[in-house]
Amino acid sequence: MSETIDILGVPIHYVTMDGSCTAVADMMSEPHVHQICTVNPEFVMRAQEDDDFRRVLYGADLCLADGIGLVMASRHLRPDAPLPERVPGSELVYHLAELCARNGWRLFLLGAAEGVAAEAGELLTAKYPELVIAGTYSGSPALAENDEIVARINRSAADMLYVAYGAPKQDKWIARNLEQLTSVRVALGVGGSLDFITGRSVRAPRWVQNLGLEWLHRLVLEPWRWRRMLALPRFVWAIIWRGSR
Ligand code: UDP
Image (spheres, helix red, strand yellow):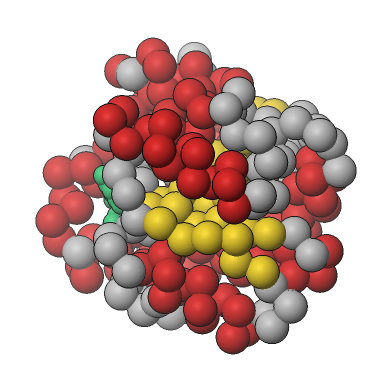
């Protein structure tokens, strides 16, 4: 895989959206399971305090710059070698579903509220008629449900897995089950992407995204996130401080 830039101890890969899809296609040709994390500044700040989460991000096969904050941080830390672009997980889920449809790979959707994964599966198959949804299940990241969920995914013979339990739960879920997943070759933490697919959450208009303000749009629509999003100013401060050393 491509090189990484270290952002406050978290390695982020130098890849574009196209490059990410190519990397995933390569991973799918290998017999073992790979983990992909869609990283934003909240992940990075969480990893400062959560050693397990930092280890998960460190061990992932691909850490993508999901948040614009990471691209901006890379410009500050490495003006000579910034990250090429943002790779939003909420867009990647469509590209990879299309890749699955083209290659006959079976996709399993895990997580989100009851019924959301099933509805997202229907909407994806309407968009990509060749796509085979191996299964959908809401479940929970609780340890008590772990083995039953893994068995369900293995029975489905899924090739690719989206896990929508939010960070860090989804990424820890994938990491602790890598050895137990028998057919999956790529497992991806997708955060709120299934909610976006089903229209339960709405992405910012393109011009707001282009201004790098998608996070602000989300805060306005989902104000209960304010406490979690305090990580953003802490992230900016930490990057400025690190870059000036
Ligand atoms: N979620 C879940 N179980 C949990 C926690 C979260 O199914 O125990 C789901 C939630 O319904 C949502 C998704 O995880 O669909 C992502 O949650 P959130 O929006 O908090 O994640 P983010 O997009 O901020 O990573």
